[in-house]
Image (cartoon, rainbow, N blue to C red):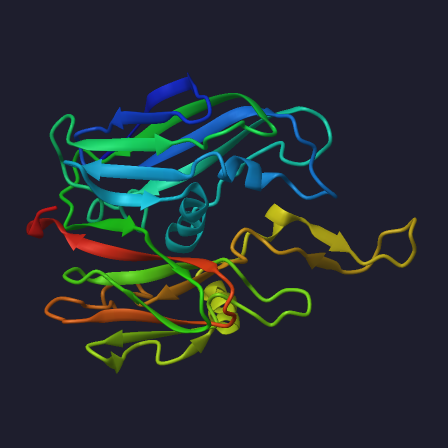
Length: 324
Protein backbone atom coordinates (compact mmCIF):
# COMPACT_ATOMS: atom_id res chain seq x y z
CA UNK A 1 0.00 0.00 0.00
CA UNK A 2 0.95 3.63 -0.28
CA UNK A 3 -0.36 7.04 0.66
CA UNK A 4 -0.33 10.22 -1.43
CA UNK A 5 0.44 13.44 0.42
CA UNK A 6 -0.07 16.33 -1.97
CA UNK A 7 -0.75 20.08 -2.12
CA UNK A 8 -4.27 21.17 -2.98
CA UNK A 9 -3.66 24.92 -2.56
CA UNK A 10 -0.37 26.69 -2.02
CA UNK A 11 -0.05 30.08 -0.31
CA UNK A 12 -3.47 31.36 -1.34
CA UNK A 13 -3.93 34.96 -0.12
CA UNK A 14 -6.82 35.33 2.33
CA UNK A 15 -8.65 38.40 3.65
CA UNK A 16 -11.25 38.86 6.37
CA UNK A 17 -14.71 37.54 5.51
CA UNK A 18 -13.50 35.17 2.77
CA UNK A 19 -15.32 31.87 2.23
CA UNK A 20 -13.08 29.53 0.25
CA UNK A 21 -14.15 26.18 -1.24
CA UNK A 22 -11.92 23.41 -2.55
CA UNK A 23 -12.65 20.14 -4.36
CA UNK A 24 -11.11 17.34 -2.31
CA UNK A 25 -9.47 14.29 -3.94
CA UNK A 26 -11.58 11.39 -5.22
CA UNK A 27 -9.37 8.64 -3.74
CA UNK A 28 -10.13 7.37 -0.22
CA UNK A 29 -9.21 10.31 2.02
CA UNK A 30 -7.48 9.96 5.38
CA UNK A 31 -7.21 13.62 6.36
CA UNK A 32 -6.77 17.19 5.21
CA UNK A 33 -4.26 19.66 6.66
CA UNK A 34 -5.13 23.37 6.67
CA UNK A 35 -2.09 25.52 7.39
CA UNK A 36 -2.40 29.26 7.91
CA UNK A 37 0.79 31.27 7.54
CA UNK A 38 1.05 34.97 8.26
CA UNK A 39 3.12 37.68 9.82
CA UNK A 40 2.35 38.06 13.50
CA UNK A 41 2.32 41.73 14.47
CA UNK A 42 1.08 41.44 18.06
CA UNK A 43 3.66 40.77 20.74
CA UNK A 44 3.02 37.90 23.10
CA UNK A 45 1.39 39.10 26.31
CA UNK A 46 3.30 38.44 29.55
CA UNK A 47 5.27 35.65 27.92
CA UNK A 48 2.17 33.79 26.74
CA UNK A 49 2.10 32.62 23.09
CA UNK A 50 -0.55 34.22 20.90
CA UNK A 51 -2.35 31.04 19.79
CA UNK A 52 -5.86 32.49 20.24
CA UNK A 53 -5.08 34.89 17.38
CA UNK A 54 -4.69 32.16 14.77
CA UNK A 55 -7.49 29.98 16.15
CA UNK A 56 -9.96 32.87 15.83
CA UNK A 57 -9.12 33.29 12.13
CA UNK A 58 -11.28 30.26 11.21
CA UNK A 59 -14.74 30.42 12.81
CA UNK A 60 -15.92 27.54 10.59
CA UNK A 61 -14.28 24.55 8.91
CA UNK A 62 -16.53 22.20 6.95
CA UNK A 63 -16.28 19.16 4.73
CA UNK A 64 -19.43 18.65 2.68
CA UNK A 65 -20.42 15.52 0.78
CA UNK A 66 -23.13 16.30 -1.78
CA UNK A 67 -24.01 19.32 0.35
CA UNK A 68 -24.28 17.46 3.68
CA UNK A 69 -21.73 18.12 6.41
CA UNK A 70 -19.53 15.28 7.58
CA UNK A 71 -17.14 17.65 9.38
CA UNK A 72 -18.37 20.98 10.74
CA UNK A 73 -16.90 23.02 13.58
CA UNK A 74 -14.95 26.12 14.53
CA UNK A 75 -11.20 26.33 14.29
CA UNK A 76 -10.95 26.22 18.09
CA UNK A 77 -13.04 23.04 18.24
CA UNK A 78 -10.99 21.53 15.41
CA UNK A 79 -7.85 22.05 17.50
CA UNK A 80 -9.52 20.39 20.52
CA UNK A 81 -10.82 17.47 18.45
CA UNK A 82 -7.46 17.03 16.78
CA UNK A 83 -5.81 16.75 20.17
CA UNK A 84 -8.41 14.66 21.99
CA UNK A 85 -9.67 12.37 19.23
CA UNK A 86 -6.65 11.94 16.95
CA UNK A 87 -3.71 12.93 19.17
CA UNK A 88 -2.64 15.57 16.64
CA UNK A 89 -0.78 18.62 17.90
CA UNK A 90 0.43 21.34 15.54
CA UNK A 91 4.09 22.17 15.97
CA UNK A 92 3.46 25.81 15.23
CA UNK A 93 6.40 28.16 15.44
CA UNK A 94 7.33 31.74 16.36
CA UNK A 95 4.46 32.34 18.77
CA UNK A 96 6.52 33.80 21.58
CA UNK A 97 8.35 37.10 21.61
CA UNK A 98 7.88 40.81 21.10
CA UNK A 99 9.10 41.22 17.54
CA UNK A 100 7.22 40.79 14.27
CA UNK A 101 7.48 37.11 13.31
CA UNK A 102 6.62 34.91 10.35
CA UNK A 103 4.27 32.31 11.80
CA UNK A 104 2.23 29.24 10.83
CA UNK A 105 -0.31 26.90 12.39
CA UNK A 106 -1.90 23.69 11.07
CA UNK A 107 -5.50 22.54 11.63
CA UNK A 108 -6.34 18.85 11.19
CA UNK A 109 -9.51 17.78 9.35
CA UNK A 110 -9.64 14.00 9.88
CA UNK A 111 -11.83 11.37 8.21
CA UNK A 112 -10.76 8.74 10.73
CA UNK A 113 -9.64 8.60 14.35
CA UNK A 114 -6.28 7.06 13.46
CA UNK A 115 -4.53 8.90 10.63
CA UNK A 116 -3.53 6.80 7.61
CA UNK A 117 -5.89 3.98 8.65
CA UNK A 118 -7.07 2.21 5.44
CA UNK A 119 -10.06 0.74 7.30
CA UNK A 120 -11.32 4.08 8.64
CA UNK A 121 -11.22 6.89 6.08
CA UNK A 122 -13.63 8.52 3.65
CA UNK A 123 -14.45 6.24 0.69
CA UNK A 124 -13.72 6.95 -2.93
CA UNK A 125 -15.93 9.69 -4.34
CA UNK A 126 -16.60 11.50 -7.62
CA UNK A 127 -14.97 14.81 -8.49
CA UNK A 128 -16.91 17.74 -7.07
CA UNK A 129 -18.87 15.67 -4.51
CA UNK A 130 -16.50 16.18 -1.56
CA UNK A 131 -15.84 19.85 -0.74
CA UNK A 132 -13.70 21.58 1.89
CA UNK A 133 -15.12 24.97 2.86
CA UNK A 134 -13.26 27.47 5.03
CA UNK A 135 -14.97 30.54 6.50
CA UNK A 136 -12.60 33.24 7.72
CA UNK A 137 -13.36 35.73 10.46
CA UNK A 138 -15.15 38.92 9.55
CA UNK A 139 -13.78 42.30 10.52
CA UNK A 140 -10.16 43.31 10.77
CA UNK A 141 -7.55 40.58 11.19
CA UNK A 142 -6.06 42.03 14.38
CA UNK A 143 -2.45 41.11 14.96
CA UNK A 144 -2.11 39.46 11.52
CA UNK A 145 -0.87 40.57 8.12
CA UNK A 146 -0.24 38.79 4.80
CA UNK A 147 -2.46 35.84 5.68
CA UNK A 148 -2.11 32.86 3.34
CA UNK A 149 -3.57 29.35 3.30
CA UNK A 150 -1.90 26.07 2.41
CA UNK A 151 -4.20 23.06 1.90
CA UNK A 152 -2.67 19.59 1.77
CA UNK A 153 -4.37 16.19 1.63
CA UNK A 154 -3.43 12.58 2.40
CA UNK A 155 -5.08 10.00 0.14
CA UNK A 156 -5.04 6.23 0.55
CA UNK A 157 -5.55 5.01 -3.05
CA UNK A 158 -5.44 1.29 -2.18
CA UNK A 159 -7.73 1.53 0.85
CA UNK A 160 -11.07 -0.27 1.18
CA UNK A 161 -12.56 1.57 4.15
CA UNK A 162 -15.17 -0.09 6.33
CA UNK A 163 -16.14 3.17 8.05
CA UNK A 164 -15.32 6.84 8.39
CA UNK A 165 -15.49 9.50 11.09
CA UNK A 166 -18.21 12.15 11.07
CA UNK A 167 -17.95 15.11 13.44
CA UNK A 168 -20.51 17.90 13.39
CA UNK A 169 -21.33 20.48 16.06
CA UNK A 170 -24.43 20.66 18.25
CA UNK A 171 -24.82 24.07 19.90
CA UNK A 172 -26.85 25.25 22.88
CA UNK A 173 -27.09 28.56 24.70
CA UNK A 174 -28.33 28.36 28.28
CA UNK A 175 -29.77 31.16 30.38
CA UNK A 176 -30.68 29.17 33.47
CA UNK A 177 -28.83 27.00 35.92
CA UNK A 178 -29.72 23.33 36.14
CA UNK A 179 -29.90 20.38 33.80
CA UNK A 180 -29.89 20.85 30.03
CA UNK A 181 -30.28 18.01 27.53
CA UNK A 182 -28.58 17.82 24.15
CA UNK A 183 -29.96 15.18 21.81
CA UNK A 184 -27.29 13.12 20.09
CA UNK A 185 -27.67 11.74 16.56
CA UNK A 186 -29.25 8.31 16.28
CA UNK A 187 -28.32 5.56 13.84
CA UNK A 188 -24.52 5.36 13.89
CA UNK A 189 -22.22 4.24 16.72
CA UNK A 190 -20.64 7.11 18.67
CA UNK A 191 -16.99 6.75 19.61
CA UNK A 192 -16.77 9.76 21.93
CA UNK A 193 -17.96 13.29 22.65
CA UNK A 194 -15.96 16.50 22.77
CA UNK A 195 -17.79 19.15 24.81
CA UNK A 196 -17.02 22.86 25.14
CA UNK A 197 -18.32 24.99 28.00
CA UNK A 198 -17.83 28.76 28.07
CA UNK A 199 -17.18 28.97 31.83
CA UNK A 200 -14.74 26.84 33.81
CA UNK A 201 -13.75 27.08 37.49
CA UNK A 202 -11.22 29.86 37.98
CA UNK A 203 -10.06 32.30 40.64
CA UNK A 204 -12.49 31.94 43.57
CA UNK A 205 -15.56 31.03 41.43
CA UNK A 206 -16.45 27.34 41.57
CA UNK A 207 -18.71 27.62 38.51
CA UNK A 208 -18.72 25.69 35.25
CA UNK A 209 -20.93 25.55 32.18
CA UNK A 210 -20.32 21.79 32.27
CA UNK A 211 -20.96 21.18 35.97
CA UNK A 212 -21.52 17.48 35.50
CA UNK A 213 -22.34 15.11 32.64
CA UNK A 214 -24.71 12.16 32.27
CA UNK A 215 -25.48 10.00 29.24
CA UNK A 216 -28.99 8.60 28.87
CA UNK A 217 -30.28 6.08 26.34
CA UNK A 218 -34.07 5.66 26.25
CA UNK A 219 -34.22 7.31 29.68
CA UNK A 220 -31.65 5.01 31.34
CA UNK A 221 -28.21 6.20 32.38
CA UNK A 222 -25.48 4.46 30.39
CA UNK A 223 -21.68 4.65 30.49
CA UNK A 224 -21.52 7.98 32.31
CA UNK A 225 -24.04 7.78 35.12
CA UNK A 226 -22.72 10.97 36.71
CA UNK A 227 -19.31 12.59 36.28
CA UNK A 228 -18.15 16.06 37.29
CA UNK A 229 -16.36 18.61 35.11
CA UNK A 230 -13.15 18.46 37.11
CA UNK A 231 -12.77 14.68 36.91
CA UNK A 232 -13.80 14.44 33.26
CA UNK A 233 -11.41 17.22 32.31
CA UNK A 234 -8.50 15.80 34.27
CA UNK A 235 -9.12 12.22 33.15
CA UNK A 236 -8.50 13.21 29.52
CA UNK A 237 -4.91 12.44 30.54
CA UNK A 238 -5.66 8.74 30.07
CA UNK A 239 -5.87 9.45 26.34
CA UNK A 240 -3.06 12.00 25.88
CA UNK A 241 -0.92 14.51 27.80
CA UNK A 242 -2.12 18.12 27.81
CA UNK A 243 -0.51 20.67 25.49
CA UNK A 244 0.78 22.54 28.52
CA UNK A 245 3.47 24.51 26.74
CA UNK A 246 0.92 26.32 24.58
CA UNK A 247 0.05 28.70 27.36
CA UNK A 248 3.50 28.62 28.90
CA UNK A 249 4.60 27.95 32.45
CA UNK A 250 5.99 29.94 35.34
CA UNK A 251 9.08 29.25 37.42
CA UNK A 252 8.80 29.56 41.17
CA UNK A 253 10.55 32.80 42.08
CA UNK A 254 12.65 32.99 45.23
CA UNK A 255 13.40 36.62 44.48
CA UNK A 256 12.40 39.12 41.86
CA UNK A 257 15.73 38.82 40.10
CA UNK A 258 16.13 35.03 40.23
CA UNK A 259 14.21 32.09 38.78
CA UNK A 260 14.59 28.68 40.37
CA UNK A 261 12.69 25.69 41.69
CA UNK A 262 9.66 23.99 40.19
CA UNK A 263 7.82 24.87 37.02
CA UNK A 264 4.09 25.54 37.24
CA UNK A 265 2.18 24.95 33.98
CA UNK A 266 -0.41 27.46 32.87
CA UNK A 267 -3.87 26.63 31.57
CA UNK A 268 -3.77 25.21 28.08
CA UNK A 269 -6.06 25.39 25.05
CA UNK A 270 -8.25 22.56 26.36
CA UNK A 271 -9.17 24.34 29.59
CA UNK A 272 -12.82 24.78 28.49
CA UNK A 273 -13.25 21.26 27.07
CA UNK A 274 -14.05 17.81 28.36
CA UNK A 275 -13.50 14.56 26.50
CA UNK A 276 -16.17 11.87 27.00
CA UNK A 277 -14.87 8.68 25.36
CA UNK A 278 -16.79 5.43 24.92
CA UNK A 279 -14.69 3.43 22.45
CA UNK A 280 -11.56 3.56 24.60
CA UNK A 281 -9.64 0.85 22.73
CA UNK A 282 -10.84 1.84 19.23
CA UNK A 283 -12.09 -1.71 18.69
CA UNK A 284 -15.84 -1.23 19.25
CA UNK A 285 -15.76 -2.94 22.64
CA UNK A 286 -17.34 -0.03 24.51
CA UNK A 287 -18.75 2.01 21.63
CA UNK A 288 -22.09 3.78 22.17
CA UNK A 289 -24.51 2.00 19.83
CA UNK A 290 -27.45 4.24 18.93
CA UNK A 291 -29.12 2.06 16.27
CA UNK A 292 -32.78 1.41 17.04
CA UNK A 293 -32.82 3.73 20.05
CA UNK A 294 -35.57 6.28 20.57
CA UNK A 295 -33.62 8.80 22.56
CA UNK A 296 -29.88 9.33 23.12
CA UNK A 297 -29.05 12.34 25.31
CA UNK A 298 -26.08 13.94 26.98
CA UNK A 299 -27.36 15.76 30.07
CA UNK A 300 -25.22 18.68 31.23
CA UNK A 301 -25.70 20.51 34.50
CA UNK A 302 -24.98 24.25 34.24
CA UNK A 303 -23.87 25.78 37.54
CA UNK A 304 -24.91 29.41 37.05
CA UNK A 305 -27.92 31.17 35.47
CA UNK A 306 -25.84 33.57 33.38
CA UNK A 307 -26.08 33.20 29.61
CA UNK A 308 -23.53 30.60 28.51
CA UNK A 309 -22.63 28.78 25.33
CA UNK A 310 -21.91 25.08 25.06
CA UNK A 311 -21.02 22.93 22.09
CA UNK A 312 -21.21 19.14 21.81
CA UNK A 313 -19.35 17.30 19.03
CA UNK A 314 -20.35 13.63 18.72
CA UNK A 315 -17.81 11.49 16.88
CA UNK A 316 -19.94 9.15 14.77
CA UNK A 317 -18.46 6.06 13.17
CA UNK A 318 -20.35 5.70 9.90
CA UNK A 319 -20.20 2.29 8.19
CA UNK A 320 -19.51 2.82 4.49
CA UNK A 321 -22.07 0.13 3.61
CA UNK A 322 -24.87 2.38 4.89
CA UNK A 323 -24.09 5.10 2.39
CA UNK A 324 -23.35 8.67 3.36
